[in-house]
Amino acid sequence: MLVYIAGSGAMGSTIGYHIQKNTDSEVILLDYWDDHIRKINENGLKVSGKVEDTIKIKAMKPEEADKKADLVVVMTKSMALESMMESIEDIIREDTQILCLLNGMGHERILEKFVDKNQINMGVTIWAAGLNAPGEIEITGKGTIDVQNIGGDEENGKKIADLLDKAGLGAKYDEDVMFAIWRKVMVNGTMNSMTSLMECTIGEFFESEESKEIVGELVKEFTEVGRAEGIKLDYEEMMAYILKSAEEAKDHYPSMYQDLIKRNRKTEIDFINGAVVEKGKNHNIATPYNKIVTQLIHAKEDIRGAK
Amino acid sequence: MLVYIAGSGAMGSTIGYHIQKNTDSEVILLDYWDDHIRKINENGLKVSGKVEDTIKIKAMKPEEADKKADLVVVMTKSMALESMMESIEDIIREDTQILCLLNGMGHERILEKFVDKNQINMGVTIWAAGLNAPGEIEITGKGTIDVQNIGGDEENGKKIADLLDKAGLGAKYDEDVMFAIWRKVMVNGTMNSMTSLMECTIGEFFESEESKEIVGELVKEFTEVGRAEGIKLDYEEMMAYILKSAEEAKDHYPSMYQDLIKRNRKTEIDFINGAVVEKGKNHNIATPYNKIVTQLIHAKEDIRGAK
Image (cartoon, rainbow over all chains, first blue to last red; front, side, top):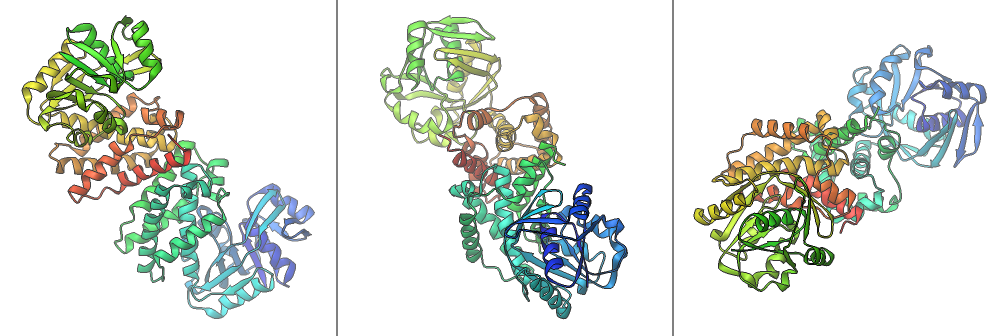
């Protein structure tokens, strides 16, 4: 099986590493970062953290890929997904499967522009990784991956879950992966956006009673829209899950904070809080809290001149 | 006439200075800052900026005041208004007039707990001043004062406006002072709260298109609630006024920013964005943007441990 990783940052490389290392599939890492590609091709991909290893693996620019893909794991930033799909259109056949593990919601609508629904597999992962230098990743947290084919092609979805599980990624087929995706979006839609706005740790934010009221309003909107989309979300259960997750991660600055505050990068807010606003519109459900949070983050991007 | 200034920071002292200097009324400054009171009693009140002067004027703690007041100009922070009124209850007769020039809205409801409506005069001013040291104020901008008696006692309201105008404060009686108060609240409710949240200048905030959209939503809520309260507010006119004011003050950090970000002090948000939320409830008008902005500022106070 030929597997492309489209977007080979920390998480993409982590998944590519496991598949190349532990299965007989061939993996090709696609990325736009010249130094990263060169180092991987020259010295192999160096892995540290939960695993210490160096493996030989191919890396190239998306435009250089010419062999048809059996599976493409898309792992770009949300904002870069569409242009990545355009770049790799030629290697996608009618039976090529796509696996999308991106944070946030709404990516399926982008993927549907390029492939049929039964080629699209959505997933959610709690693996965590960082990129220390070109060609060097650090796996900071082992996790799991849940996968579901959203077109109903269960067979192909299960094949992908099996491959990832054999690769050591703790994967399973999940007939209700949208529940897990929504739950993760709610965690990101409260912690990531609010700590980026307030410039504080998760714990500092959740200490304030006013903060918890804001979180409550955000979660109310998420659960209402989610239920209208057929996802069985319970407000009390979600709040308890978020408060527990916040307690566990209290000393952390989430990825959006890292992007916007540390690196002055544009955020994925449109695929998190912004996505529930868009989905809310389809059901005539007002989502003022998620809307203003989305606008505030965009305003902050503008004020900081984020790129 | 015996005039007390209840709360003699920069603005209170500026008004007290003008009345004591230019009319035959006696002024007593009330405040809780020991050093400020002592310096004024020892050396007089020093005035710099638009005026250079030193005058002899009495200053004392509110509890030490024992002569009945003809006029009390309340100039505390909004949050301190109620406890100030409690402290000076004994010097207020049935014919004592109160003049309230505080920023924000909703102070009349606090004053009504202590005096009749026809003793209450609301006003709005664009004078600007700072406090350089105990006993030393700096008048940074000459302005005007608009006054109206909210109980309909026009005669008393006009007497106060006359006194302040003779004092050189550019005062006039205004039969529609609530319009001016609402307009000022809208300026503060967009610039002050948003620059405090974003930690930027007025100009930096208003550069962003997303920011302007947020401002638009805030102003929509303000005008809708204001109109329900009988104030003739026009959305387009208010937006134009705010954008013009923002352009003129583009390099400034507003007072709320100074309080919260520079001095780590609690803000007057409940009397600005919070006040329109409260008034909106009485008319069943939803004000989600003003509500979340109020909550975000309170959350920021909590996170910063503001006092």
